[in-house]
Image (tube, rainbow, N blue to C red; front, side, top):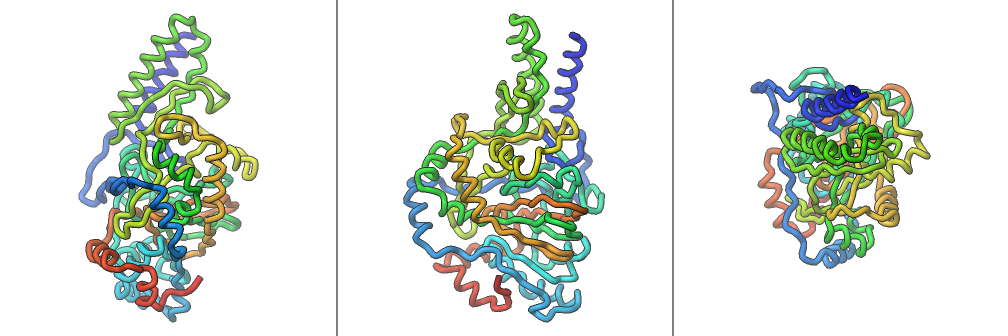
Length: 432
């Protein structure tokens, strides 16, 4: 039996040293990476902006303003763009205005464009409007499969696995530790036979709709994510008591050193019970961070908090609707998250309920068909995915920024009512 326990410990060490927590649909890779000239840069560091001194005042000011426009649509059919050549030329000609609209409205939805029905055409689209690709934010800890299977491809799979079809992907901004893409483009290469809608939420609206009391508590105390769990240690309880404490200390030390050497942010390992079958586990928690940031271009206060996807309670509640999560291997079990206050205290069920309800009432379901694209500002727009049946093939490209960024930043600084002025400048945007 003791050799079995030693084997378990060695497996855990191999897991945390070979790769960090995996998202479902990502493949394992070793720590050795071969750099090539074709490899895009890492996702940029998250820009939180200056800390608000009086978050209640900021919240009140945001609530007093008109509701911002969110996720307008552009239709190739409405614009009379029938050929791929015409569509590509349209994107080149209107690149700057499209990026301004993405910034002011949080997201832009493109429909009826034949150009983006293939990966090649999708890449032509985002290159035409001047988007700068970066690596998946999980690059340093795991590898998300690419659409075409090429190692250096900038177009990744967007959680299409059959094993995850009954898993509702909660609303979230894409970020890992200290890194977050500035923008993203999601493309539909094949829609699911049923369900599988892409879902977007305006972070500015979530911020406005939360109660001022909860906003103040969350912002003052901060939030902290549990980014992985190692649920393999129930057997320790069966050991003699005098052995448990030193063994737990040794396991924690080895795992902590391995994980922190792998990622570019500090991870705190804590012993606990719960998770799978309420057994002893090691839980890795990221550093405390604010749930609200200052948008780096427009200056808007925006909700930047993944509670809807990361809270274990909210995920568990959704199981009553969609069925239990399907964990098919050890990596799936490791990839389990949760959220706490920044001081490690548990967030109350009432607070989680309010955040869940506000998120749900702001969700916009986008049923995408082949060639449709959602270009979104990752700081303003959260995204997720509905459950589905059939075969689904969606891809995503992440962006570190875009051409003309400083010009756009200057534009917003000089514009008091940027959304309305941009709307006048761009009459070709179709109404929702």
